[in-house]
Length: 442
Length: 104
Image (tube, rainbow over all chains, first blue to last red; front, side, top):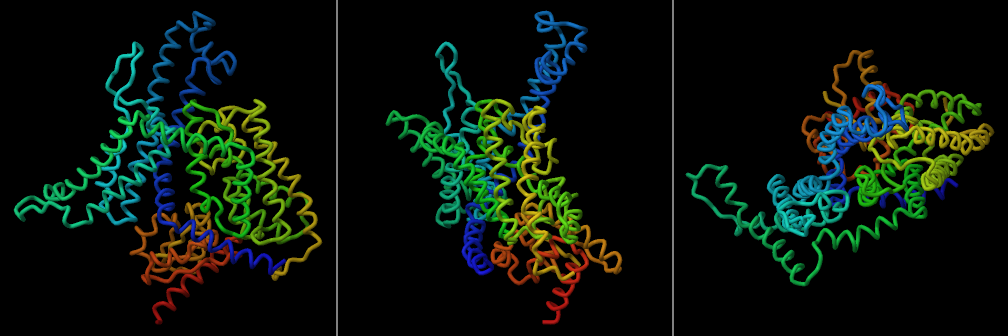
């Protein structure tokens, strides 16, 4: 067994190293993490808007806590609908929605800026002007007219082109625009040199004039070509040809199980599985999360779904407290509980260790897979709502699921998961009582 | 002296940092110990005396080494010490690394 593991490790370490040291993927991951605060703040206001302030929602509505009934002075039905209370709540909802738009409706717009900023960093260009140029390119490929109700054309952008449907086109446009811009601006022939008497700030803006002109022109010609050929705008094309099929595929139970398997298999080798698979997560499960939050779609498998499942190692902790006769295991479990409450598994992973421990390989992978199947069944069966709101992944179990789904059922799902996980880990913990670990030196 | 611990998000290493600070206080050693994510390593590198990598990102060791470029010693934290949160042992290792580095 030992030699099988070490030869496996020899294969997996370079793979993991290749993936996570890939500069392009690293820049992408960094860009997504730059935007995380905006998503979490947006989600907070989203919860305010749809769960708390909604006159017919969980807190105010008659199907929920019915607080609105008391607050509006005992009104019901049509008189409730027409009351000043409902009007006030709705205008507050509108305000909250403005914040939601920053993190969700405009996500891809921000992504263009963040990603091209990071790309300029790895390709050696001026970060801020690259980000501005890429934003310019993104605006050029986006339709700048909206068709009104009467079929008239109004100047303006549709949020559809800046939200979750545009994640992939944002990544592509940012890549191409940054690449062209950085290449050109590093070329000395492209720089307009100003005499020394010109202030540096002015001279600097002239330096990038030609690269900006060429980059934006390339995108203009490209957009014009699409129009002449009678094709749809770039955003729609990319969504229909690549992103939509990708989303459909990744929502299959098969792909989701494969994803979970890869993540936890890497973790079993002590390699950060989520770090290695970040690209997959960002390309498919992040847009799914954004769409869920927007309410434009209902995807079962999203970032929130998988992050809620991080708690499965708590099942191991409980199984150890219940069944383990190993003093060393009980000691590590005690040590690891405070961190594990916040879904941080490293003390357990490296302390027990779970990592490279043959007896724990099966349950460590089986538990998240079982959770995925159970979650898929109950959500598609309508027993639990989808994971709609973004919660920091360190949110303790029960609360994470409850806030993420905006429903008590989500919290209960995590409790069910926990029970199943304890049952999955228990036989292996019991079996390990009879095995003496080679490293039990203390 | 600045001892920096690096991991994916800086979450789990921050637990270890706490224990290392406790150990340093007991031994009355004046050190600054911080944990952060690997993404901001390049901003922090110039003030570092020693850098330790969480074992879960040990596959990024060569990459981190390139970023550090001999500015200070770097090693991966022992898995068991990391898991058991042995702050004193990791602190001792870090101090030894600095000592050996100066000796060269």
